[in-house]
Each structure stands twice: as C-alpha cells, then as structure tokens.
Image (cartoon, rainbow, N blue to C red):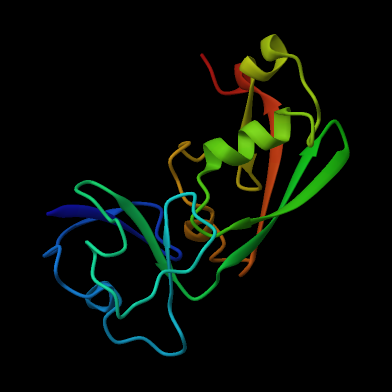
Length: 154
C-alpha cells in the first residue's frame, strides 16, 4: 500500500510503498536519537514495533517522521502575538483555523477568508504542510504572520 511520509525539515511528502503487515520501524531507517512517528494531525506517538495494519494506517495515509513531537507556534496579527503548542504532524490549515478562531484572534468568517498565514520569509506554505517540516531554522518553533491575502494576489 502507498502512504505519504512527511520528514522533519522537508516540506514535500515522500510517497512510500509499505506492506500492511510490516513494522512501522521500516519508515524510520537509521537515525540518531529516538525517532517520533505521528499520524497526520495526531498527538500520540506511534509504536515503531507495531505493524501498519495494527496501528490503523491505511492506504494513502499521511505520517510524520522526525525527532520532535511538539512545536511551539507563534502567530502575529496586527502587532499582537498568540502562541500555542501543536504536534509536529499538525497541518498549517489546522493552525490557521486556530489562529482565526476563538482561541486565536477571533476573526469573523468573512475576515478569516481574506487572510492567510506566512512565514518570516514571506512564503505562504500550503495548508497540508506539517509544522515539523517548517522548523528547520528554528528547531521546535515556527512563527507565522496572519496577513491579508491580497498582498499575494495579482
């Protein structure tokens, strides 16, 4: 079966063929330290000795492989920061929903639709990018700005 593996520090996922009865450890390969494997948007580390099937990993599932489990996120909007800690497998789209929601900046639905998250480099990562793929320069931390979309449109 094919699954998609998101690696720490690499924004693009890798398509990998695995056997459902095979151990999750085969995704990790030789690494230093204790690797962390998480289902997309999941908070619980997966047991590397269990099989893909036993863990409920299905065809076309997305998993994150890295060294860090948690990522501290800061979002800046109109000079005000909001911070939260997320799993490294959390997608940018989930962070956006938090940032525009009641625990973030509490924007109306119409205002939220007119905004996007960008990194310090002014790059707006795709919504399906995992946070752990974005913290290469600042391990364990990702900073965004919530800005109007029209800055990036023609």
